[in-house]
Image (cartoon, rainbow, N blue to C red; front, top):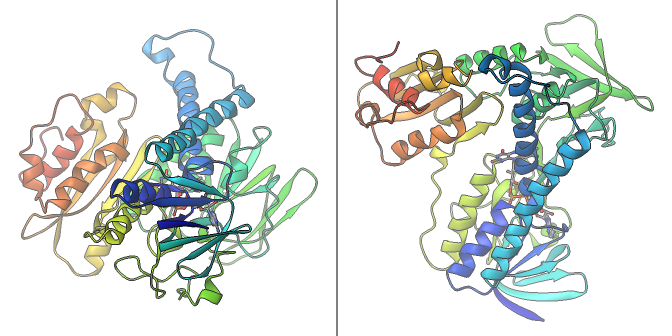
Length: 462
Ligand code: FAD
């Protein structure tokens, strides 16, 4: 029997980051992971492989659409799909291997296998029992589906299957216009698939401001994605190599059918806590199947904590990482903190879409007096130079104090630029603070400054 200060269950961004912080704080730490490689959903079948495919297919798009215009003439590259997948696997391998290296460097034990918690302070993996003063559950999430839609990971696939399709489908139907559906839909549209996104709501990316949703959808349509909005999918029928997606228009009328070679079900993810024995242990769950925790990530069972996708909050890698670090500090007797009001969200399409804080629509619905500064990338020299003059940056501030309450950027490198706003929000900055900060020229970030100027006397280049 081995004894630890902390055993973490799951080596995703929540678990592995927590383990490294625990080790840095002098705690004897082990991580149990049942997958063959470390890194969880994010590194193996989520953030990283999807970004590799987005990058490769963006390069293809540039070659097809923009190279000739820039005087780069020659044969447009053709797609070697097995090679593109192998590039993606290499990227994944480098990253998962990197975590293994970090575990060794920080003297973290990787206990290979699937864990259960027979009692507080005990973790069972196979026939072995391990003891720990503290247990952190970071078991993550798995894709969810819809009634009447059976996943076979061949014709009807989740994001995991979509990353490994044997060939590029002629016709793909994506169920769900959320982040994962739009990112992977973009990948296949750029590879030449006819992509139709079927969405129950009337707008893409629920929760974003309406102007962001409209602009984003329009840009994706220009890139060839088709949308059927307000459509309730009733079921998917499959033959050996084809599928029929049946949906009911919400506004009424007959059931409609759309054909596909592959259907990607991107209707969200659900928390995963199976096999841990939480019922017998008496761990309280929320109505949505998440592990219930307090503000310090404690469950109701003393010594058992939970973080990441398996608890409440946005299912994002960086949210899981922040909780991982914070729970390590709590366990070490320090003060762990996560500011849930400043967690950015990014869609890694081209252009990228990034948001943080409150939305204009939500604040106005609350009756809060706000000012909005908006600047179009058409007025940004750098964006135009890279054929990305579409979209805008907008900053939402309190009308009286000018304090930044939220922002949305739809434009090049939006996912990186949003952090300027995040830092501003953490420091309680005003739009004027951003506007008075010198921004290098020519950068995309100038659009953020212009949006901040638009909250005051007005932007320069509009
Ligand atoms: P996970 O990463 O799910 O890791 C949990 C780990 O626990 C798994 O490896 C699992 O095998 C292991 N485990 C579970 N139970 C046990 C057990 N009993 N014993 C041992 N091991 C166990 N987020 C972003 O922020 N940015 C993105 O760009 C992004 N892109 C995504 C793209 C796709 C296609 C998908 C599917 C997700 C994406 N996400 C993205 C979401 C992100 O992957 C998750 O939010 C993140 O991985 C959650 O981290 P976690 O540590 O909570 O859990």
